[in-house]
Structures are given as structure tokens and as C-alpha cells.
Length: 430
Image 1 (spheres, rainbow, N blue to C red):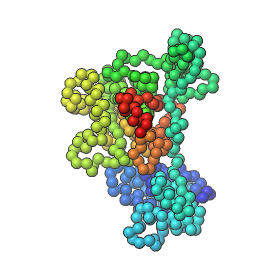
Image 2: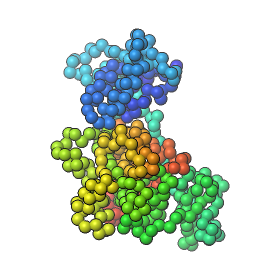
Image 3: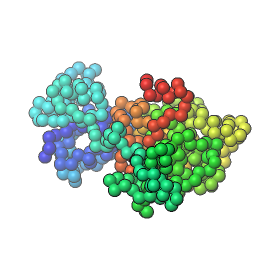
């Protein structure tokens, strides 16, 4: 059995399934963690759902067991779960949150060697100040800096470029092992270049399909945008992630592609656009007004992009055109809270700002996809609005790390900013 681990509340808020990822481990849950989780359950947001889910797992595991605070209960993965009830010596006013967990850690560490696992940097630092080993919860973590980018730039001969244009394909260099739907920027020097995509069935780099002159008024401005649009318009790619800083075009391209596939190609029945209510998927119930009025605040960046598309396509008054599409059930804008529990067939779903979702929330969203549905997630993992995860442990980064080997998935890292010179400078320097 490994050294005992003490799990913090933040671990369960981030990943309610965390208990089952520690194998052959002595797991300790201080009673104060259970109290904190119960406190979160009174809300109506993703945090509350995660807390409730974690508590239900703990409840099932402990049901019918005796002496759970002494011997613990055995789990199927070889671990032992123990709930630790610590008598407090501190004043009543200190028996909450960070003080309660510190009190528990001090008592437990006096009689056995432990590792404190928490997503909260502040709590980890406090534990370390007591001489207790503390670690981040890293089971769902990929390095953003070395993350799969969706494309490779390679040098080839001029003859290879010429053959590629003649036949529409070329072989993959022997030392390269591409992922399905990975793009290749082929350079032969002296302004000889080509753009292709790895076709897993053929085992070759193939030429991209020709695009319409514009896609709902939008024309790609660089190779990254061209590849992103290829992914967005392909029926066989059911899941797409677009990562890039502000101004890279990820959201406007996704919206334009969705409108094209619904109104021009009639592949999907409707487009559903959503984004997390920051932080940690809060419910919009605390805002005044009707649901539509509440959503306006959170969805304003989407409305701005839609207005731009409507204007360049000559659709007249934006508010009237938007309402007309919504009344016809062709366009739906919804908070993520309201997507949960729905089955969404034949829809083009766009989730913006997906870096502010946990891996568990990402899983929940993707599992909502019905038959014939395509899901697009956009975001920038360097812009996180949560205390409990970062660019390496957010749901968007995790998804790219786990899915890039699947042929139904495509990804593009968009590094070029196509906004104003000032916006590009701010994104690069500030």
C-alpha cells in the first residue's frame, strides 16, 4: 500500500470521479471535506452537481460499513477509503474551510505519513508550511506547451511538391508518425509550397477539398484558418477543437461554417451556441430578468460575431433577423447549464471559451451529442478564469491530449492574429 493521501474538496469539484483514479492507495477524506461538499450542493450549477456526484460515490462506498473512521472500507481498485473525523481544538469561528482542513491535516499527520492532494495552491502552501507534503491533482493533465497542434511544417523536394499538385497526394516521410486529420504545410523552397491533410485510410497526405469562394461571407486569411475551415466543413469529422488567442478567427470561422452547413448545405437542422458562465459553470439564476436577458450578458461576444456575419450577408436588421432564426428553431443560444440532460441530434454545436471547463464538464457536453451532430469547441488555455485548473489541466487541453489519435476528431492550433495591429501587439506583448 502506498503512502496515505488526503483529498481536498477542490479535487472533487474538479473531478467527482477522483476516488476511483487512486489505485492501491490509502485514501483519507476529512469529515470537513464532506461538510464543504454538502455546502456546495445547495447551489444550482456544475459545482453543485460535481459535489453531489462525489458525495453519492462516497455514500455508496461507505453504506453498511463499520468503523470507517478507523479501518476504512476496501474498494474494487485495491484502495482503502477512510473518513477522518477530527475533534477541533481551534475556536468555533475557525472551524470553516481552510482552517478546518488545516486542523485535520495537523492531527492526521501526527500519527501517519500523508500526502495532501488539492487543486488549491493556497491550501497546498499552507499544508507545506506545516511540514506536510502537498501535491496538485494531476491525473487529467497534459502539457499545453507540448500539446498536439494539428499540423506539421516539413521540408520536401520541389519534385514532391510538383507531384503533389499533379496527383493530389504524397507519401508521409518515414520519420513522421501523423495523427488522423493532421495537416501538413509542405515547403520545397523558392516559393514552392503546398497544403495537405493526412488521410488515415490511404496512409498518405492528400490535397484539401476546394472551398466555396466565401463561407457565409468569410474567407480564410492564412493556412491555419484554411485548415480550420476544412475541419469545420467536413461531415466525417464529428468533433473539432480550435485553440488560439483573441483575434485568431476561431469563433467567427466556427459560426460561419455552422451557418453554411445549415442554410447552404442543409446538413444539420440547427446551430446551438453556448459558452460557460464563468467561473466554474455558475448558474444564471442570480441575475435579474428573463432567461434571454440574463444570457445576453454572457453571450455578448457571440452576438457581436453573429451581427458581423449578418451584416456582411445583407440580412437586414440584426435583432429581427436573429429573432427570426430563433423562432424557426434554426439558431439556439443557451447557457451550458441548460444543455445538461438534453440529447441533441442533427445539430452543429459550438462551445466557446471551452478552456474554462473541467475535463468532467467536457465529457458531459460531448456525451450529449446525438446522431448526426457535430461539436466544435474553441478557446485559449492561456486565459483561464478558474482557481482550480490551469492551461495544463483544463478540459480543452485534456480533450486534445486524449482525442488526437481518433479519425472522427480534428484539431487546429491557430497562432496568427488577424485583428488590428494594436490587438495583435497586445496579445503578444501584454
